Structure formats: C-alpha cells, structure tokens
Length: 170
Figure 1 (cartoon, rainbow, N blue to C red):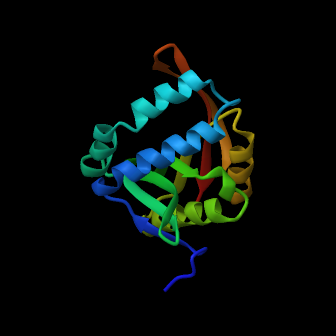
Figure 2 (cartoon, rainbow, N blue to C red; figure 1 turned 120 degrees about the vertical axis):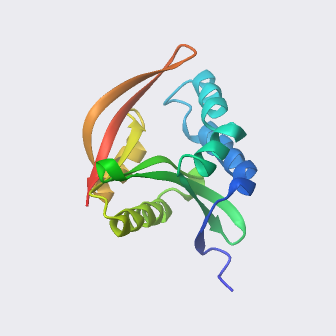
Figure 3 (spheres, rainbow, N blue to C red; figure 1 turned 45 degrees about the vertical axis):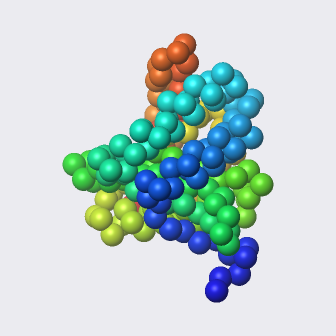
C-alpha cells in the first residue's frame, strides 16, 4: 500500500473524463487569472475539455492521458500524443493543483512523458505555454526545454492564445 502522500500515475480512460474536467476547471480557475481573462478561461475550458473533445482525443486521435494521484485523490493530469512523422511527442496538457507546485510532481510528470518519448524513438518533446505563464516557463526551462518560437493563435470568440513553443531535445 502506497503512503497517502505518495504520487502515483495511471493511464486515464474515457471513464475518467469527469475527473479530468473537474481538475482542469479547478486548476485553471486558480492558476490562470492574471495570465488570461476569466472570460478566456471559461471559453477555453468549454472548448478544450468538452467530454466529446476528450473522448475523441483518447479514442480516435492517439492521445495518452495520465492522471496523477496522491493516495486516491486526483491532483493533476497530462495529455500527450506521439507524432511519428516528426519523430516528436507533443504535450497538449500538463496541469497540477497549484497547492502542489514546487514539490517535484510536475517534474515527475514531464519525466514520464520524456521516458515514453525515448522508448518510442522520438527526438523531441514539444509543448506550448502562455508567454505570461512565467512560473511554468521557468519549470520547463529547468527541465531542459528551450523556447523555439512565439506563436499567436486565434481560437475564436475574440480570443488569442499567445504562446511560446518550447522544445526538449532528446
């Protein structure tokens, strides 16, 4: 039996969609104010975390979702996809309850993805991060990611994602 404070990782399934949606809502509403507006948070949560969107990513698009749990409590998640033609793995989501930031859990999540990427023969791991998300950028850089380019993406609804693409060379 694992200690109650130990972090365990497990693959998420379609049955975990309500847990993923709840975590996303809690994490985004706590972490992102001041980085993006509340209206954009609501818009992006609805767009990216609709049950049909997550179900399609898992069932049809090859995304791997992983839940991080402390004991039996879900505390974060990651989602990533292998892109064999580019010899890359793309992280699309990596979120952890803000109360657990700075405890090495995010690093463990990144290592899990990196290890999977290495096993698959990928040469890079990529992700996008909001340019104003200084805390996350610093964590990614400490892990070995480097900023590769700035990307502004119109996501509709009058909103733009203003990101850095970051790349980890394997």
